Length: 225
Ligand SMILES: C[S@@+](CC[C@H](N)C(=O)[O-])C[C@H]1O[C@@H](n2cnc3c(N)ncnc32)[C@H](O)[C@@H]1O
Image 1 (cartoon, helix red, strand yellow):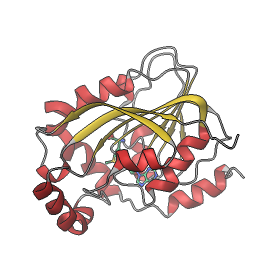
Image 2: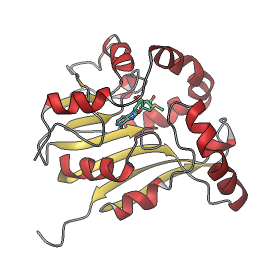
Image 3: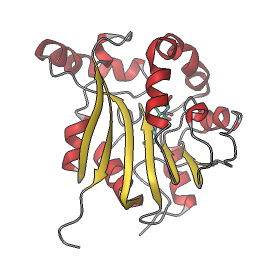
């Protein structure tokens, strides 16, 4: 059964977050945004269409990249402090974006509600990536698209092993972010067909958060249905 808004908000209250980390988020990312992330965000977010859900919208760094004339835009963000900063940002032209406090693991929307789900740098942070992927799949229409941009565990053996060793300290330093998630295989195992559109190893970010991948995932038809 779909969670109610109240149940989702209660679950959102249990997601870690603080006023300080919300305030520091954009200054900490400033260099990365200037030297690459902004361009990547644009490539991912400009592709959305129809009825759109953004997962973990944070402080709203994607808002300036949405196309005009969307049917619906819902911005899901569990952290109350980031949600406040998000609410203060200008909306894309012609779209009255609604902010909903919920974790990715418990989305208060009916099945098959959205044409596009989009996220940037969120599957690295959610507590339960598999449960989040299942919720994304559930709320997407059968012909919908999940657009993502994530840093993932490196295939290079030395860097991958370093990311495994640094997972704990990095998580403490970077607000719950896991630097060694195998997000693309996880999406495939969760019932998506995944097309990696771009992968970049030489990003001007610390090696623990490389490579960055962006792509499109489409729900695979359920053989039982
Ligand atoms: C690294 S920030 C990315 C924010 C934004 N998407 C961006 O690209 O700037 C990770 C975001 O995921 C959110 N988050 C953490 N746990 C979450 C969960 N379980 N479900 C959904 N979002 C979550 C955080 O509050 C934060 O806004």
